[in-house]
Length: 304
Length: 304
Image (cartoon, rainbow over all chains, first blue to last red; front, side):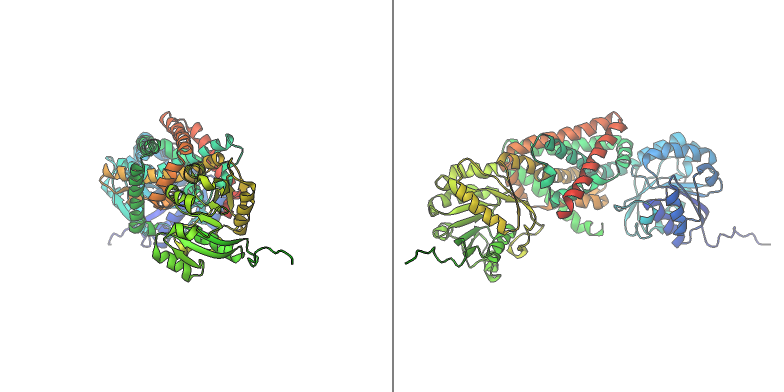
């Protein structure tokens, strides 16, 4: 009698557990279901209403608040929660997860994710493949999820020394199923790049809005009354989740400190040129910024 | 025989000259024509094609490159040019303008506009009424102008010590005709408010893009490749005219230096909290920024 592989109906995973069924987690599992990669999908999270809605929408088959019990039969874990929750979740997975299960995540900082896994997930570190899909919208929650969120967007995979090649190739299949363009680089490079183009802009927007508040305290007028379209666009990201950005700031500490220092140097150069009424220096700095920004928009911006 | 006022057909000015027939200048004279406030409108500027287009569109009656000759018959001057051009234009107006003509402007900084007028326009300083309509679009040139650009937007009038009440009341009529909500305040207050909500965001965006370029030089990857929607919105204003922003930066020097220092302090507070891993401090700063920004959007943002 011929041996056959277990009948997974074409699926490559029999039981996926998505931890955090929000915009990102919900969109990932929508893709896995569409591509038929997984037989059963369970959701784990804190908000009952959101999990119930995910089940109603058919995005997950079942849900639970009990992470340890749910992952006992899992062969794929997708972690889509704020960075601040990694330590606790990894600690539970470390003892509750079957030995063959693969783990990937969608967190915004990667050195920290690997460091947390080394400390709290040592039993499974060889099967943890960190990833970061560069995609998102203003919305949150499973209701906002959709299966083309990652289509054509970059997804950065950051391999680490203890990771197995088998786990890497299986996680590639996951992220390829989302339609992402996959790019591999070190966690350090990822964190520096994202500090520059994503994390710093958020901090700069928070700082700017707080600066406007300070100006208001020293004035008989409310400066916000005179803010216009430029202010709206510049500060849109200051309406992002404070807790999420606290987590990102702390978990990308080293890269962000360097990036913040570089930004302050750029501001100081502008400040000095204004102080010394050096119009040529200002024109040079503003022109190089405009050219780089226009070039970005032409090359990449329209895809965003 | 009864004495009658000169027959202006209901107009309050017989000959307006708009210096700089772009988005702002073109939109102002569209309003003046719509409201029937002016009998004849002449345009003065540097670009022949733009002036010809303005005449074709019926926005101006005639145009010239010769400022002195054109203003010789004017009773209203509308100045809508970059701040860097004020000194030269005022010097010409000072000798060429009739004694009864009223002057207003639409420049982004007001202490500098008044200082320039005191130096270069002493013969007419009593009839110079500085104004700043808080409106604009991404576009430039007369083709982009439209007569509802200022509708419901704030226009700040900054009276000065040497200005006559008659000139002020006549300039009110001009700006009221644009549909603006008029607000009077000192040039110093104006400059501080605008430094905070408009000028600083532009400098911060220029600095941020230049910082990303620096990061790129130290990396094997192009950071711009990983920039997404947040970056696009945050840096949109970095695609603004470098020459215009050089002029604004230099002409609002005092207020901008203070505002930049305040911004650097906000950034340093965030930096220190990250360095000391003070999550509570970060959460507090990000939350206050988010609340202020959300409140702004609710109160004023939808009108922008």
